Image (cartoon, rainbow, N blue to C red; front, side, top):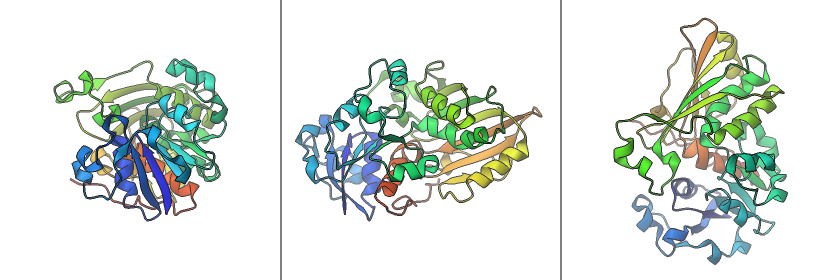
Amino acid sequence: MIQAAILGASGYTGAELVRILAGHSGFEVSVVSGDSKSGLSFGEVYPSLKHLNLPKLCSVEDINFGKLDVVFCALPHTKSAHIIKDLPKHIKVIDLSADFRLTDVNKYEEWYGMKHPAPNLQIQAVYGLTEFYRSEIKNSRIVAGTGCNAATGMYPLIPLLQENLIDPEEIIINLATGVSGAGRKAKEEIIYCEVSEGYTPYNVSRHRHLAEFDQEFSKAAGKPVRVTFTPHLLPQNRGILATIYVKGDLQRIQNSLEKRYMDEEFINVMSLNTLISTRHVRGSNFCHIGVCESSKKDVVVIFSSLDNLIKGSSGQAIQNANLLFGLEENSGLVATPLFP
């Protein structure tokens, strides 16, 4: 069994890592850390996972990393890199924070307001968008998990930019995400009365996932690309739905996406003009994409939906870990979406 530690296991993405890995035939969860919950059993923090045979939560300082094979790091940015840079070199790392997503450390400082904590490790990190960096991930030591919003927009748009099928100057992404994307710590703006029965835009001009869009879309197009991106907060626990407006030919866009994802187990391109919903992917590692005609002849509407805690985060991390250790890529991830 591959010995795994989950740092930040008491948060939402950490708990999803625990839940999925506990049923994985290749990994054993031997360490779970959660500094604010240190000393508690996992069942005390998450009663829904009480049946699992897990160690007690501990502090990072108490971990013996020498016996571990892989570390899943579900900690805030900067804190994550500070820990990763001191890990033994034999350990493979899946980082779910933003610390290693941007290849340019100067861009990291621009978007996150501080110098990169481990710039010498940045060149070792591979961006964790599995379906596009599969071969690089297999041979890497550090995998940088994507932002969940970023992944939702990239799956439909990168193939179209690579094939020059859409106008890169005319891309609008309106995206709505569930509240779990904001994390588990108490914050006034995400308590029930602030979120329920409302639909709210946020970070309209400076959302940090724009940095990932800039990086990956520009790479795909071979020239600088900057999209219009507006995120919104949905009054639901989990799930992301992106509504994307592009200029291009409807049928060519549909054909391109069908061809690109024909052999990808976790990306489903629906029939033309199919409307999709976050409830169709809830609790799964799937991303659904729908291409639809709009009220304007030259504008195509593309919908993209995934579960932010799984395909957008923890499921993606495990998919990448499977690649790192030579396991079947879908191991532990074939659960169907929850419905209703």
